[in-house]
Image 1 (spheres, rainbow, N blue to C red):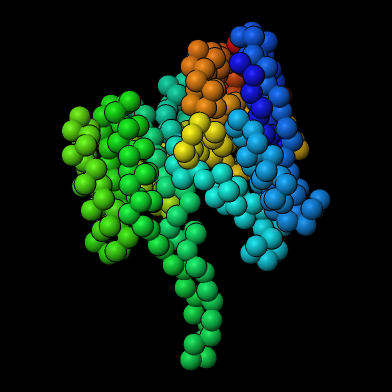
Image 2 (tube, rainbow, N blue to C red):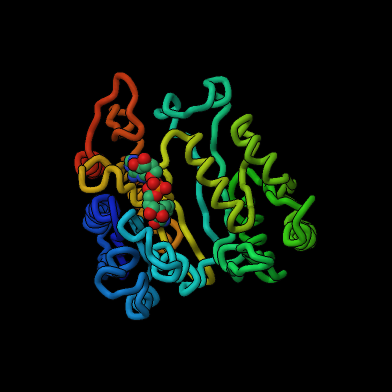
Length: 356
Ligand code: NAD
């Protein structure tokens, strides 16, 4: 196959981890007879420095003209004082909205080799952690109106959290369909005891439920879900939830699986073009020091092969190679434990290449 991939290295550790993922994709292309053409895209802090805005229209166009997008991470202290619309994260929100990516898919899987790195008790981890958070990505409070005004001599801030039925239905269907491909359990996480948006989510989900009789459907308040993820994560298969709850729960999910550096994600809309990125940020504290874990980005490339390019054998090969280096005891600092060998970002990438 021939594919064009838009590559956003971004800021902080972004360039280091993306470079390792590209070496892996090159090796996959060589072994399986594919051609991947990479198109560099500026987004985030580096785009602000170069173009004065986090995602210039021409850069978004390059993504829209590609078969998929691979992203490292954006942001950092350098741009933190910038006004709201000139911040690196705005580029990310604009990219998701511009590409119409409403479904963010974040697997939380404990690699058995990393069981010791989970902060949870062994008795909890032993039961296994393997679930997936399907997060609505372009609606809710992150995309509603934001306002700060003076009322009666003090500042009052308001953030609006809108959801319409069609937005809920399309992500709800992804939740049910994803569950059908896994262990057939779907839990809708919300705050229906307080929020109208959550009550609308439930109404729409109940309507959809009858179309997916093979899926065991349940509902949970988000505060309880945050607790249950620590108490017994093995109870979950697929969680579907709105934008902000998904943002928070998926970070919690990454922590209990050992390291934030291991988790990939996909964001999809209509059609096969997606955005693939690790779930962590630009880690400015370790940027440029060859300390970053590139596995989340490498596994994101594997997800791209699986979900956008319909190449499951190639994706399996990458995941097997990652498992093999973990078996060998190689660890970057974020997941280091006693008896293992500490390696840097480039050495970790090289070891994965050697196992492909
Ligand atoms: P972060 O995820 O960048 O870092 C949190 C901690 O995890 C740090 O100690 C970091 O060193 C470590 N870490 C993260 N990824 C790692 C990896 N691959 N290997 C080893 N260690 C890793 O979160 P933060 O510190 O809250 O944010 C830093 C910047 O990133 C901020 O500007 C934030 O806005 C931005 N951010 C960007 C994205 C994105 O691009 N999608 C997501 C989250 C945060």
